[in-house]
Amino acid sequence: MEPIKPTPAPVFNLVGEFSNMTKLNLEGVYVPNVTPFDAKGEIQYEALGELIEYWIGAGVSGIVANASTGESPYLNKEEIAEVLGFVIDQVDGRAQVIAGTGAMATRETIELTRDAKNVGAEVALITTPYFFRPSEEELYGHYAAVLSAVDLPVILYNVPKFTGYSIASKTIYRIAEDCSGLAGVKDSSGSPR
Image 1: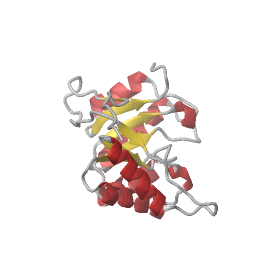
Image 2: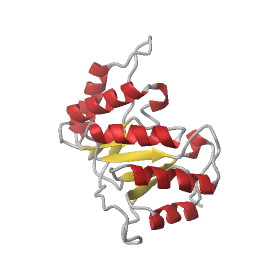
Image 3: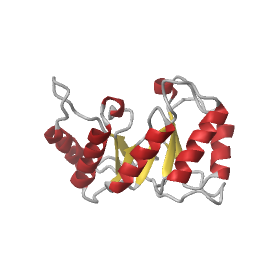
Image 4: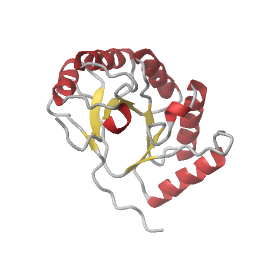
């Protein structure tokens, strides 16, 4: 199999614009990995390992585990940590691992991000809270609380397809200006505003 040719990751580093931003080297292809389940809803770790080996063999720079494609809302807290730990062990330093740790509530997001760090994640990808539609001030408060409570670089993930809304650019800039630990933004809105 011919290796994947690296292209810019869909993550925008804002380093340079804000002095307190965490510097993070994200170059190449970062694949959002699925979490395979059987017909009974049990995680299929053998298939997950095969997927990781496929991506590594294809030459990816990183694997994103437990994000929206990884179906983390369907996993309980223990399963999220187990899947992430499995992915980190399987990757074994051959690529970077980004952990999806976003949740509906700030407290749960903090817990999932701390758990991700404890199992060896290098970076957290945190979606805006879903189900409820927070105001821009509430979004600012959410990310400010998470960033102050965790010791892991965070990529803010704007994905209105799954959350039902898009975070405003001015809120992202305010977070970047006021909080340390933000490393970048992944914007899947198609039209940043």
